[in-house]
Length: 195
Image (tube, rainbow, N blue to C red; front, side, top):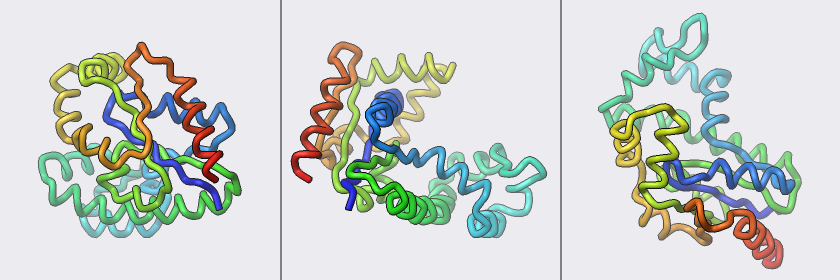
């Protein structure tokens, strides 16, 4: 049975960079954001339930009507909870199938909402990628061509770093000064020794 690593961290922390490093080192990574989008496009069950919840306009000739879904969710925590209740179980099941297919000693799941979505139950070890708030803000503003205020709102909507840290078995510091590669290699080495 593979050791399943969960990689999480706030916006701009660099969890995607850590995921890419793991991939380069031969460890397959399941990216929940990408897979959730795929499932929302292709999974008939999700399609049916989202249509029942939001209305026929949630899918159009181009597929998922993202602006409509975003307006349904925005500012309505209960609506977000309902959509997540449809999507998250499908992502969890898809991850389980993916792990069985991979047949590797180590596999990883990258998820910004690992804790919030209950995905910590799907992994053996949680790795939090940490960067100071100011570093995260600057990265996300640059990367997303967003305003500081927009990024601040997104940070505030995510689980606090201290709460994420409480669930983490490992913390990788990605502050722009501490070298990342040695930390990732130490993580792999430590997990491989305990397997």
